[in-house]
View 1 (cartoon, helix red, strand yellow):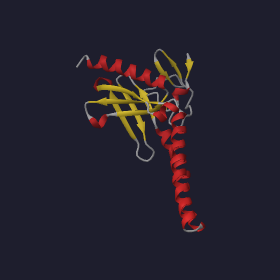
View 2 (cartoon, one colour):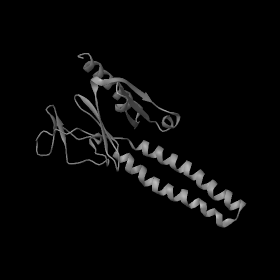
View 3 (cartoon, one colour):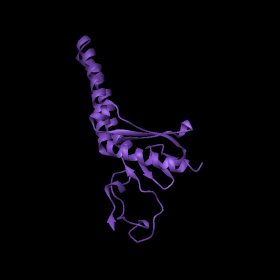
View 4 (cartoon, helix red, strand yellow):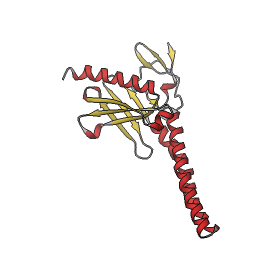
Length: 188
């Protein structure tokens, strides 16, 4: 038997009660079979990328809001730099809360994606309903070694995205979801 891996973490990135796995399924410390999904948290690279973008953009806005009025009108007008700086501090904390809220779980018949701090949203995507699974990575994501998996279904409102994955994990997930989607849709 092997103990729970770092992927068995909850949205806070910490491991829960000691879990062990065997061929019969996931078992808790008492040995009873647990029916809940095994949630996988997003890697910390996504948080690092989002925080860097926050600092760059709000830093530039703060510099422009304080420097331009400070030079043109007077030094007291440089106080206009304070609101963007306060917003940066607030955003720093909120980005971590948002990052911790994202998680996904692969079950036998569907994929679960959970996100949200104030308004929790859990999306269930049945494998048989998937039409397309994409792996995308923009220039900033590639710089940080990240990729996103986007799932497309027939209903537009059920499209789902898992951002900030390691590219190898994103490709593995894409291949697995595509394989399961083909197997499930063959019976329709």
